Length: 258
Image 1: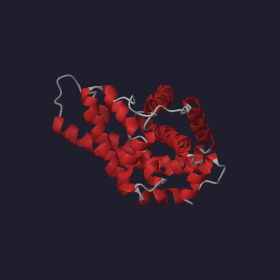
Image 2: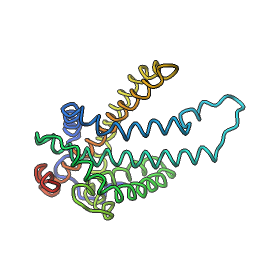
Image 3: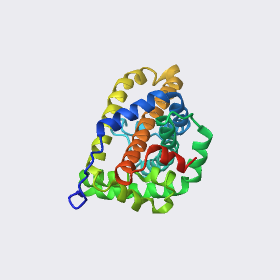
Image 4: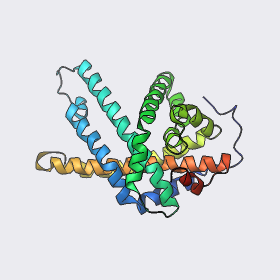
């Protein structure tokens, strides 16, 4: 669970730079990020409302709780959310590198590459998620550490073409940098939490009555942007690890999927 046996990094990951680059790309390509994330986020939001997970915690006192139905609904939402997040991450990894090099956005190419690699991404993401859950049953820290181990799963598949060997490749690439990676993700998630806290007040206004449709739209846009920032951060960390460990520049990475 620790990197004590790993080779100590001679070059820092640069968590501050990772966060700065992630926000820079997000704001520079905000329309494209929102567009790529909109449909997956919309499906996610609609499904959450349709299966009733959002209302499961708000049962009236004494009301019966359908455990079997809840577990089934949770499983459906989990799988669909996993696929949606995989699509978003696979597309935005590519967009991030084009944005960093000042190249034009190529949405069709991003989606084509993502769909081509989707089977490996989804299957391995499910495997990794099961491992996270098992590790977290013992204590939360092992689950978080394991998340860092496999955090480069999507870019390893999309950029390096590792296919079903991506779990091992991600573990190799993150070795020695797992705690800094966790630190970077914590900062990203804190930013998303603050963003979500502020927007929750807006969503509360449009969550019922004639404004329900607008509330769903706003929630979808917010989720799309949040997913976008997290995916961009993954891409930036991957590029940084490749640069530190293998001397590969961002332009070299982009040349791989040109």
